[in-house]
Length: 254
Image 1 (tube, one colour):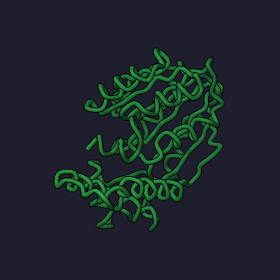
Image 2 (cartoon, rainbow, N blue to C red; image 1 turned 90 degrees about the vertical axis):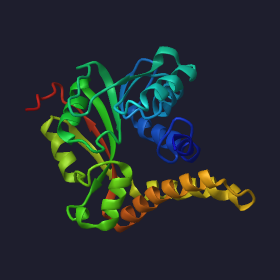
Image 3 (cartoon, rainbow, N blue to C red; image 1 turned 180 degrees about the vertical axis):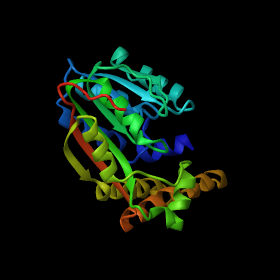
């Protein structure tokens, strides 16, 4: 299944327009060879290597899925970025991450299936004073849990059918002393990227039929993405990008 997702999203990426989207998220940080970046949600390594290659920054990726960690490490090793692109394990429920160490941070879907409070606290505490934080994640409406499509999508994603709201994330960031400059709904862009990626993937099937095993993988993966698109278009799910700046001194999070 991972190989199929790389076909859909790009080598080392787990969401459509993977490299393009990651660089789009990182660009406002004004990265350079002197910048250090923490990246939560390294996935299979693509985001870490892409940012290091594009901006020359020192990118420390963190991945919670033990199955993805060695794949991400190998991807970074083969990227040619050396020590500028590295990946390590982390535990979202009890994040033990470096404090006041990085200039900037990105979080890519790192809130999936976990309580947002400890993750956001760890992110803010990783940054030096006036560091920038870019966060992208899915949020849901309060009534989403009653939707059968939402329940099915959550099951296929392997996550509890409970997501935070945009308001909750923005409030928590503020309580941490972060100045939230942007909270942008990027759902439409994501839906467009999903649809385009699937069109490109299935186009060759007009002349070459997939094997039965591949067809089963395609159907299973397509259901997951189709449900996501349906929920996004209905407004039950939303994909939001936050851009915040930490205070001169980060507040401790009780």
